[in-house]
Length: 200
Image (cartoon, rainbow, N blue to C red):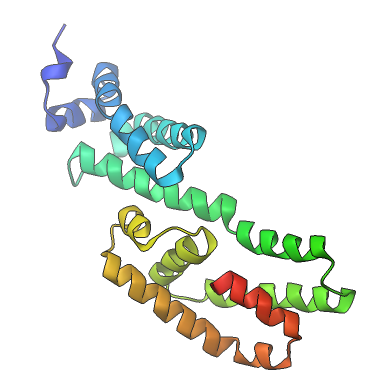
């Protein structure tokens, strides 16, 4: 049996496209640990990190014949991990902080029914305006303000310079404040508190 561990990534990629199960196993053994650490660093959750890596390898095998490696296997897998993590955050946690902020106010009994309705309308308006931001800016803004990641962490996840991340967040807030100006003018006093918590 050939010593697959001695094969280069390029050789393994070629064998994988031919449906070589041993080549797939070698790629899995070679990169699973580093992909898990990379995913775990971004998600801070072992179970979610394992799910991300397993999904990537499952897809890799299922689509081996049609996968085009324009970069090295290592770069391909790192990129796939980063994209999968971002998708997971956006899919599962997009409303977490909004709902948490509302729940805090509800628990304290600080809102009357009419005010609650207005806050729900404001949150819907905010989400609509956030969705209208340019895709790159929106992703960075959500990672910063919804998931409370630092500029450095966002830079690592998105592969965007830390300075650019900071500028994108600043620009997003500026755009949203302009778009939401009318809502703030007609809103009740507590709405300002909610908005400040979301954008703090």
